[in-house]
Length: 397
Ligand SMILES: [Zn+2]
Image (cartoon, rainbow, N blue to C red; front, side, top):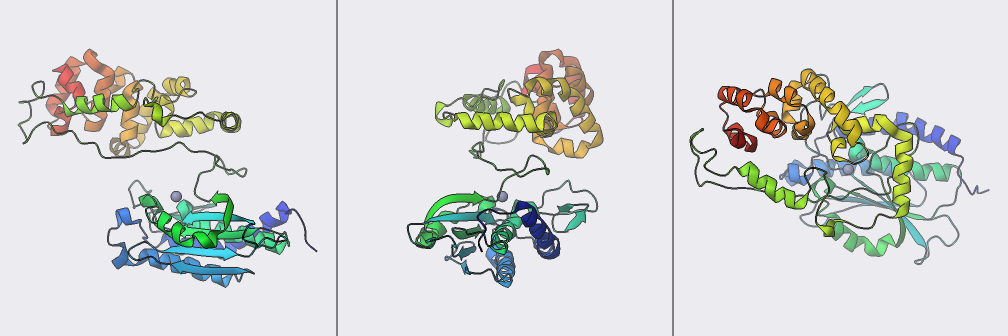
């Protein structure tokens, strides 16, 4: 007898048990493998780690013996490997060419190590603390293949008919998915008529409910370089005479973004925002409210944003001071945090000026011409070239 809808309580119990028993050990093994994306591991082919994590995932999937599932590791020459699976549909007529397919997507390549791990944690050391598993790649995006298969198994355990399902688990996502489209071209005939894509590679607002990400902001990246001189000059000789590279950078960036409001200026980056997106954003804000804002604030984004600006401006100074005291090294390394200091009161800037050249570069923008005396005093103690190239400093001297 087929059920038509899923008993979610039963499904949760089944998947939770499977997660703890079978998937968690897989994720721990996965975390221990430094399967960095090609951008961060140009010798990925020699390392063989992407190959290894794909094989490990494939072995686990095959061991599940999901009815109607076929799996293949697809390899195009010179490209990162891709795990492809297809599961026959169990709805009436589900396997006809014209019937819709559900596509599940994830990736197994990882971001690099970075720093800032607590002393007993590390990128390649899986540590389970309470119900959180720490280590590189477990959440982004190692879990995706396991979650996909577990979801299909939950349907099958309750005999809920499902459409044909295919899965693409790639290994170049963190490098911009350069290999994904060539694989899609090759696999197109086997994907079928894809009607729904479930991309298991996004965030969750909290751990209390199921979240679906329906839209993300876009991203454009590049390398911007400003070259002023053909060779280095001694500190103190050139500032105020040679134009500051920071000032030129700012002017160029200001053509793209209003630096006071964060609004992206070229019209081609904008689109009409559908009404339902606005409604979804409002519903999200109603659920998450201030705690979420604080989280955004922690990465120094909120003070740019319209709705959070008041909150951020009020709390930014206190936050920045607290953060600085708690984690000076991390703060100094975080460009985004330094940028947040644009809104920090001048007093704070004065007090901390000279401790961190990145911090100083931002702080001077805040303090502007109010700071010449303190600025010069602190500049004197700092002999780093970049500091002297700071745009604010040019203005002061
Ligand atoms: Zn990801």
